Amino acid sequence: MRRKIATLSVAGLVLAALVLVQSTSAAAPKQTGADKLLKNVQTQGLKFSRIGRMSFAKAGVLLIADRGNGSIVAIDTGDLGPARPLKKRIDAVDKLVGAALGTNSAGVQIVDMAVNRQSGRIYLSVIRKQDGISALLTIDVAGKVAAVNLAKARHVRITLPGDGKAKVSNVTGVKLAGSRVLAAGQSGREFASKIYSIPLPLEHGNSADVYSTETYHVAHGRWETRAPIQSFIPVQEKGKTFIVGSFNCTPIAKFPVDGLKTGAKIKGTSIIELGSGNRPIDMFIYKKDGRNWLVTNTDRFHHKRRPFGPSQYWGCRVDMKYLGAKATNEQAVRRVVKYLGAKDTDAKATRKFAKQKGPEGVEVIDILFGVKHIDQFDNDKVVVLRVNKGQLDLEPAVLP
Image (spheres, one colour):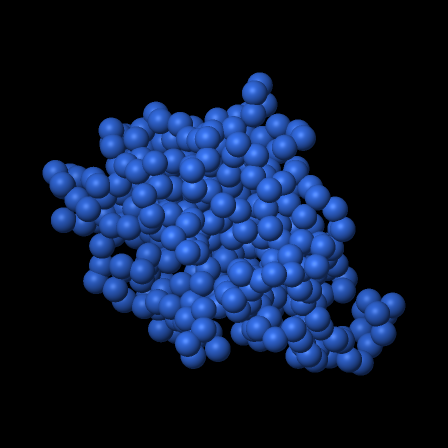
């Protein structure tokens, strides 16, 4: 039986903000599919120090990074369908979210978005700026905003290990990978970039194995150990598990994660580079015309006065054949683009964007210009959170 998630009204939310949510929840079922993923489940008292990135596992279990205390929280949402995909654009979602937390669109930070494929419901991790309160909101296909009752949510929390005396200072992502959950983050100084591995079932109070990474940053021309993986996906290649992750400025690299002892140092293999000045946001794989494509969207954060194409937010797809490329690290393939019209020195001019001339299998996706967050509903069918004339709209889209 699925727990009910009540719609939030603006009047009720001012009071509800004190506890983050104003939803109700029926008694939890004795057994759910989530019980295979979770152990020693807690049923009350969930709070986030600073809510972060999210992804869905299975059986309605939502994985969330708590950046404020270096932990991973898994919530049994009970949201099991039926699937109802978003069919039309919902305008000014940031205003709806602001109103739901008793403020305006400028008063909230939408940290991440995750789509539950089982129901089509969209989940947003949100921080209210005035007091730093974290909330987990949902939006249905009708644009109705609701909140997960964190105070009564069935959940487990796993605290990630730091590096010696250094605490985990950031958690940049978390995803299910077969019989474990993988997370990326940052701790310590010299080898600060970390990968964490947590076995299933996720047990409340448990910890994780931790590995340090070293990565060749193609745009910088050097090996680096401090910058964390910003977005990643787990992949299987010839029966082995890898993390394929992307960093600022923007190398895409792969890291083997099988058979490692905690504390191991992993030397990554950079397979392609998408250009300096970009911060990767989301990443996933889809299939089209017999090919597997890795999709990533980015924020051109270093060059806001010189956006790539019509927006500082843009995205591309990379043929997964590059995962086995022979030219790597110093010889890794680079994305090639060309601007037409305004000169590079004229930052205020409107630039015309010409589609890239190569390399083959690395393609800019036009519909991802302006997209701050993207997640799959079903293979090439996605939901995007797009910047549109100063507001954020929620839209369904189909990838090329």
